[in-house]
Length: 166
Image 1 (cartoon, helix red, strand yellow):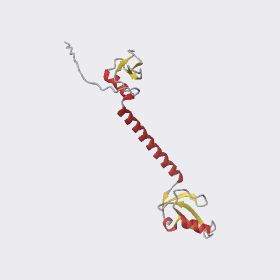
Image 2 (cartoon, one colour):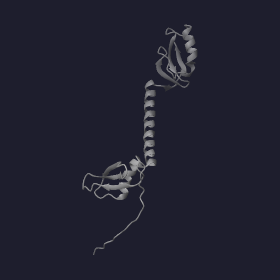
Image 3 (spheres, rainbow, N blue to C red):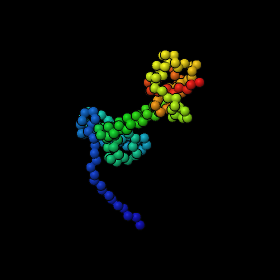
Image 4 (cartoon, rainbow, N blue to C red):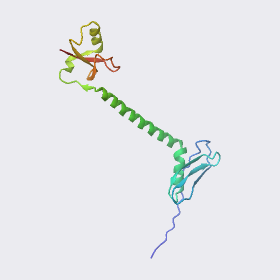
């Protein structure tokens, strides 16, 4: 034996105003194709249209979701904020890679004992006290040394020099 059940559901579905003109009379529809069906909404005032791919018998809720994705301002703001957050994360990843290309490494062994400020190094270099005959040095921060020789121009981030006497 089979039983047939009929269900009627009433619910209100939010349909955002048209992003282009602000009009609220939006027609939700689909093209009624069995495959490659397209649906969404169209503004009756300015004919602005937002569509997307849908199944063969989309619900009004599905069609409204497609329309809202392109017209609901709070939704669009969330999408743009997510895009910005992803871009900022990518920028930080790239900066980290750029920083690792410089190869800043924590001090080890006698590095901290060989540390001087960049100003002290530059004064000693200008006076001829620190030369390549005396030793060699690398640009550094207060806690890390780089692989960039002091013979190279001082990087913006360099506040110190690790100098190794011969």
